[in-house]
Amino acid sequence: MPITRRSIRNYLLLPGLLALAVSVVACSGPARNQTHTGIAASFTTPTASARPPAATPTAATAVPTFTESARTTPPAIVSTPSTAVAGRPATISTPAPVQPRSAPATPRQPAHSPAASEHELLGRDIVPTSEECVATVGAACFTPAQVRGAYNVDPLLQKGLDGAGQSVVIVVSFGSPTLVKDVAAFSKAMGLPDADVQQLYPLGTDFKEIDFGDTDGWASETTLDAEWIHAMAPAARIVVLVSPVSETEGVDGMPEFLALERYALANHLGTVISQSWDTSEDLLDDADGAALRADFEAFYRQATAQGVTIVTASGDHGPLGDTRSGDVSRVRAADWPASVPQVTSVGGTILTLNPDGSYGSERVLQAETVASGSGVSRFYEQPTWQTQLPAAIQKVLRGMRGEADVSAIGEGLIVYYAAGPDEGPHPRIVAGTSASAPIWAGILALAGQAAGKGLGNVNPALYAIGAAGRCFHDVTQGDNRFRADPGEPAMPGWDLPTGWGSPDAACLVPALARIANGG
Image 1 (cartoon, helix red, strand yellow):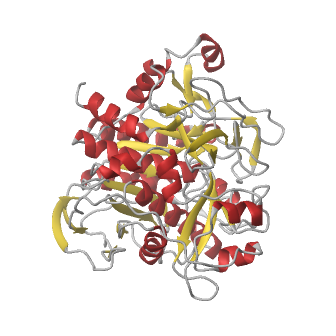
Image 2 (image 1 turned 90 degrees about the vertical axis):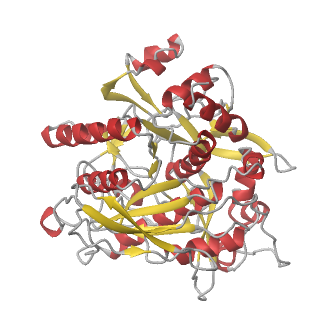
C-alpha cells in the first residue's frame, strides 16, 4: 500500500529473497522504516509544522497533471468541465476513453543465459522467469500472464472485458516522477497494451520538506499499484491522485487523503478507489481519531452509494498493530480503513502453479518480515453479511467486524522500471498485501464493465457468493503468525487472514455483474 511508516518499514526482504531487491509494500500507516529495495532504514517524518495544512482542492488550487500516457502515441486530450470538491467549477485534463482490446499477449522471452546472481537477475533488460527466481533467490516470481492464468482472467479479456470505459483511482503520497515511463516499460516487457495513466496534484507539489527515502518509497508503491491494475484491466484508465504529505500512523496524512478521495468523487474520476495504506485502529481511539473516522465513514457511505468501490490492503503484520513510531506493536489491532464495513479488505497469499502453469494452490502470506493482515474491529459492529459466518468464527468476532474479506497473491510479483543501473529497463520483485489490493482493484474494474455501472460496496455480494461455495480459490493452508503472535489459521470457507480466498475471475466477474443488476 502506499508508504506509511508501516509500509516503508515493511520493505524488508523475505526469507529466500535475501540479497534481492525485494519490496515488501505494506498496507498501512506511516512511512515505515523500510525501503523499496528491501534494506531496512529509518526515515525522518516531517513534523506537523513542516507539512502543508490539510486542504480541500478548489478551482483556485493549481492542479498540475501528467497528461502524457504510457502509450506509443500520446492520447487525445479533452478538457472536461467538472465540479471540484469545494463546489466550484474546475477543469481537468482527461485522456479520451480507451477502446476495448484483445487479450494481452504472453511476453516473449529473448534467448539469454540464466542469471547467476541476484544482482544479475535484477540488472538485465529481461523479465525473469519463475525458474530463474527459484534458482537464484529461492522463491518463485510471477508475470501478469501467469497471475491472469491462475485467477482465470484471460477468458474475460478474450470476450472484450478488459476494463474499457472504467477508471481506477490510486491515492498516494508524493506519486512517482517516472510513473508513465515505468508503466510503459512494464507494458512492453510483459506484452501488455499501452496504458492510460495520469497523475493529478490537487493539493500541490511542494515536497521540499520531505526526506528522499520517503518519496522514493512512495514512488515504488505508486509504480506497483499502477502496473498491476493495468495487468488485470489493461484497457482501464488509471488516475493517480497525489498528496504532498506523507501518510503515517494515526491521523497524519489522512485528512489530505480524504480531500483527494472527495476530489475523485466530485469529479467522477473513477468507480474503483485503490488504497495501499492504513493505520492501526488503536491509534485512532482518541478525539482526533474519532473525528477523522467519522469524516471518512461519511465519505465511504456517500461514495459507495454512488457506485464507487473502495479496496484496501489488510496489512502486513499479521494480527498485530503498530505504534506511533512505526514499530510493530505487541498487541493485536485491526487495520483501518480495512475494518470499515464499506471497504473491501484484501489479504495476501503465496501462490504455487502447476507444472503446466495452471492454478495449483495458495497458502497464507507469511514470512519473517511479512504476514497477511487480519483483525477484529474495536469500532465497527459485525455487518449483516458477516452474521452468517459459522459459529466457530462468531466466537472469534464477538459481534464485531472481521477482516480480511478476500485475498490475492502477495509474494513474488514482478514490477518494472524504465531506468536501471545501466540506464536500461529492469525488474524488481515485490511482496506484501499492497501488491494484493491492486489485483483486486483491476478485477473489480472488469466487473464494473460487465455490469455497465459502478458496483459500490461489493462486500454483501462477495459474502453471498463465497457462502455459496462459488468463484473463489479457498485458501486452507498456513497462518499469519508474526513475531511472537501465533496468528490466525487459514481454514475451509472464510477465515481472518484470507477472507473467502482468491478470485476465479471468469466466475466472479459475471456473478458480481448479475447481482449489481438485480440478478
